[in-house]
Length: 244
Image 1 (cartoon, helix red, strand yellow):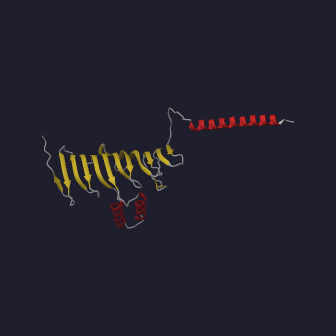
Image 2 (cartoon, helix red, strand yellow):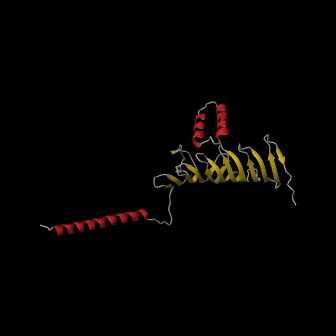
Image 3 (tube, one colour):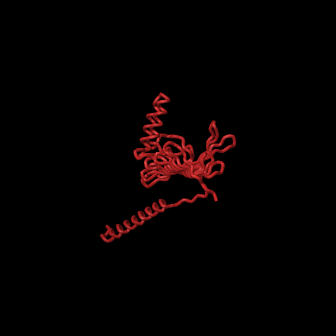
């Protein structure tokens, strides 16, 4: 029979062996978790960037697999969106993105690129974009920085709910009237545009909080410098620009 001393030695050896095995497994697993793969080239249709808890933070995708959007913890209904990157905040709600496309229509080709930042729980309020419409080889474009704003009572979910209900109205005239009311009360208002307009003017265009254009400093399509203000009646006042 084994002595007490030999039993203790056996248990000690067993404990030591198990400790080494468990430590090796832990270090091996940790090494695998921290392993960084390197690729020279990779083909992929969509990449999801996630937090440790699974919260989505960014999606890089082609057009077919592009994320439909997310607000208040819920994905929006599936819809066609351009390829690019969609950003999500700490709550997992969409907060901006970078998109680009060229699309053929019966009227012509629509092309462009845009990077945008969204208002909390709403749509884009800062946008740097290039928008083009090509027809018969001629390009009509708008390029620049646009700043928008939404009323305090407006949220993406609330506006979307109202629009969904309005779309059920069968009377075309009444439906259009309701849509206009929703947009006027809850839609975005353009406050500032800096860039090139579709009318081939380049300049700064500033509106009031209701989105009504109030001041324009620009060079028109004929190369003439302009400085104009607009009153509440829509009447334009020109200021003389003296050239030396």
